[in-house]
Length: 462
Image (cartoon, rainbow, N blue to C red; front, side, top):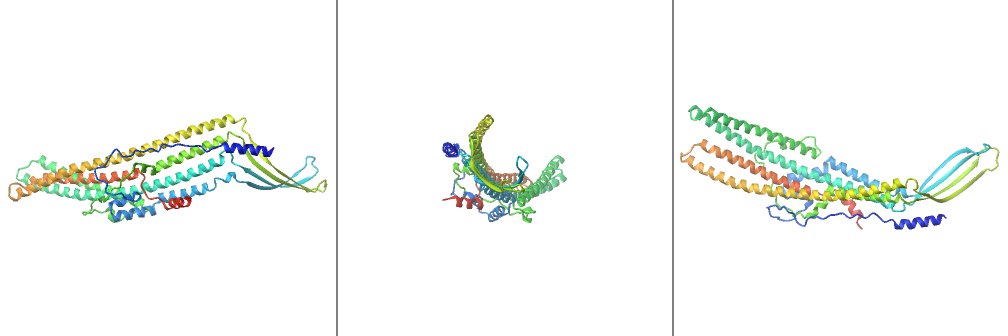
């Protein structure tokens, strides 16, 4: 009888196929938004920040990847998931237990000492063991995605904060020049007022411009300090370096030396897409478990019972009884509940598949938005450069007229103020373009893989 049950369950196990999942991983062949800057060459996308060719930035990113605490936590969680995944088959291994106790017979005449060795083996048929392994693999995949997400966000944030510091320093130099220009214009207007050639309202207006320039300096100092402290935290430090908080008259925004061509299918590296895929695998594993629960569960059991008579009234002294056989759990009265659970897991699987597709669409939209921002800032720079050329021509003409005595210094200061404002806007546009590139590479999940992930991939490769 046991052999017949075992054969029947083995046939049912052969009919239990793993849950198949088809994901829509389609991405556009080409990006709809295109930047104006030509693609110079392909660079290593995992090292995308090196396209700025800035040794200080490279050193900061390397330090952050080695010292950041969020990344360290993600590495430990990945190791934890791998350890747990290694025990996924434990419920389907033979379990051996031993015990002992004393008891009396039904007539309350003799007392016995019972010792037993029990063996139980859940065969994990009908896809139960495969589903458990699939669930464990999904946990590892999600942990890898979370680790990659931490590294992607870390690299992008470090570059972002470094560019913020550089931008604040550049704008600080321009704002200081604007303050000096406003101060000089105020002095000249005070001379004209003393000569009754300028009214009080004009003087007050110029004083307001001077105060605005001074306030701009404090705003830039605050932005620089915020970026510096945020960068220090990303590096695992409790305080920033002094030069991050200081003004630098020679500071300049780093210039991209090369722009990598980004294929659209690179989106599949996005951590949130990888996490969505792990969620699909986890849902599929739960479907497999719920389907297996609809059928009888077979467990092989065995025991060896040894009994020793402890009383003086020895009708028997000792005996042992071996028992081996199958144990079958048949869902009868709760089958409706199990069917509802299985149907619910099917719906959850369908929802996770749609969530995966939505993650892909979100990635496409985010990357396209970053490309649109890059193109817009490049066009903005072209317009500002044209305006800057006009201001430069005016400054040159004003210098000639002033040298010939045909114009005063005060007359040319308005154009100087406009020229400095145009330079400030141009610096802002360059910084916005750089930050758009940061957003683009973050959108496609570009970051170096952790050594723990690389070593694991090398181990699983045949």
